[in-house]
Amino acid sequence: MMDNKANSLLTVPLGDLKVSDLALTDAGVISQNLLLSLVIPTYKERDNIKNVVRILSQLLDESIPGEYELIVVDDDSPDRTWEVAQSLTEQYPQLRVMRRQQERGLSSAVIRGWQAARGHVLGVIDGDLQHPPEVLTQLLFAIQQGADLAVASRHVEGGGVSSWSVVRRFLSRGAQVLGLVILPGVLGRVSDPMSGYFMVCRNAIAGATLNPVGYKILLEVIGRGKVDKIAEVGYVFCERKEGESKVTWKQYVDYLHHLIRLRLSTGRLGKFTQQVNFPIGRFLRFGLVGLSGVFVDMALLYLLSDPTTLALPLTRSKIIAGEIAIFNNFLWNDAWTFADISMQQQEWRQRLKRFLKFNIICLAGLVLNVLVLNLVFNFLVPNRYIANLIAIAIATIWNFWVNLKLSWRVTQVK
Image (cartoon, rainbow, N blue to C red; front, side, top):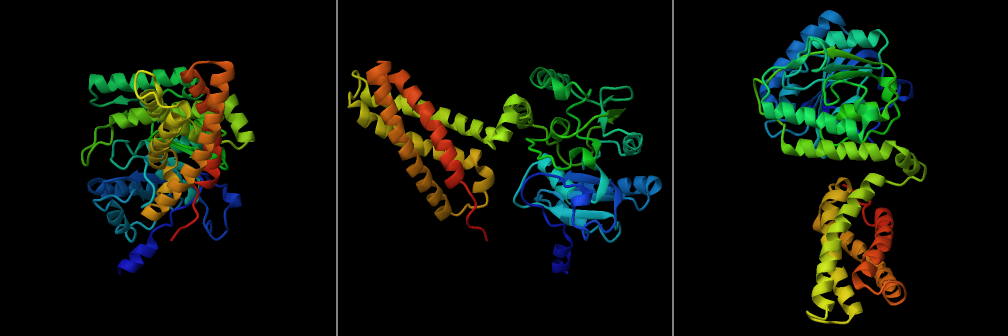
């Protein structure tokens, strides 16, 4: 019985977060073209999922019977939300369930659901009943009237929030203002860019590689998709009745990170990096990690080489300081910069292999670093710290590009 249940789960798509056009999808997968595919991302929503599926099914059976599907994408909830949803599939044949065990995050869950979807219109709604289901019909109507994107907004006529604190209202508005400053071309097109309740025509995002951070997938859809006409429908955001809130300070940090990355990747710099196939986002993370290594390197260089401390020779001091900085950088890069790859190879032998590759590459970079340091210090700028910074900058580019190609790549999978 358990084997049958396991087999009934949707296969989690792999690779880039890219939604295909129906015309390009294998014919066997789209044996029945549907109007709407509505994704419900969940994590620890065991107490809500039955009501959500029941209410949505009743609503859509009345408006578009037989022309929709519900896709629950669960991030392997410890309360086994996915299992509860799976038990409902016999009662609700339009329900499909996906259990993700290797990935996490609401935005990527939504896109994985869309990748498995069969509808011409793709939608998303929270699994906690904070998004009023009756607004779905208005969103779908807006799409049928020619909109590429229909957004449920708290900031147009008919919209609002039920019982938010002053602090939460301030943070929400502050986040929106910050977004308008950083990314006006995206956030300026809608009144509620932080909404997680919307529908989009499949062909508006088909083929675009989405790269979301945190919860705010709407930013990706507008920023990377081919979205011309946008419609907004007012809704009142309700407080959850069951389960626990997922809103934390980390979500605001992810939001800021997302804005900056989207800004860099969609502007002139983004077009350039796409042309030369350079992963600017990963390089920025690599650079931040390298910055932590700079502090380690500089501090140790001072302790080892300064005349007032140990007064060791400059070259010897640099080698020792550099090696310790390399170890620091490896730990951070493995856990953050290349986390998507290292998660697939978590055995200690694989981690050791990555470290040895990283160390060899960085030692080559260290040789380059030492040469540049001495050249700059002896012939250009007779200041050991400025010379060291210049040497680090040159070596960083070398280290990133070669490590990207050799150290963090999936070569062994079960």
